[in-house]
Image (cartoon, rainbow, N blue to C red; front, top):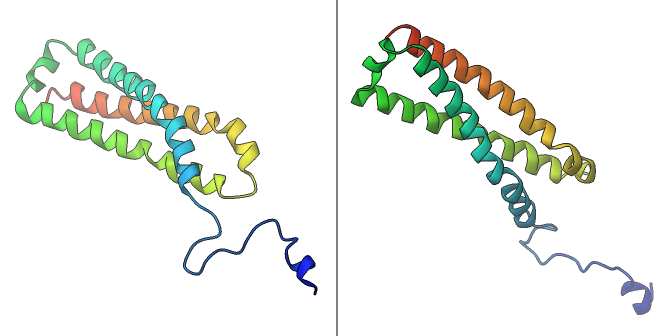
Length: 133
């Protein structure tokens, strides 16, 4: 192989110890996509819980205690941890050859996750507010 042929490779080899690709831009893309949608996610779940709380008044008012509020905060944090599962799927698929198609249809993951989280929130709200504490 001549020196001219050796220089036709468009991508230089990665230095030792450095990956051939960087995940940073993919994570940044995922953050830009998912974080604005987290607001809608939390608003929907909050509306479900508030709806069942107000539907169970005055009995549900007995849950407005320190333990009751801490329980709701715990569930809200848990719901947001579950929301982060979308990042695992998103970045994983973006690392694959399916990236271009995925970027057009990843809204499906959001909708399915939103429906699933809404169903789980409904069950927790029913269980929490129908028991009266």
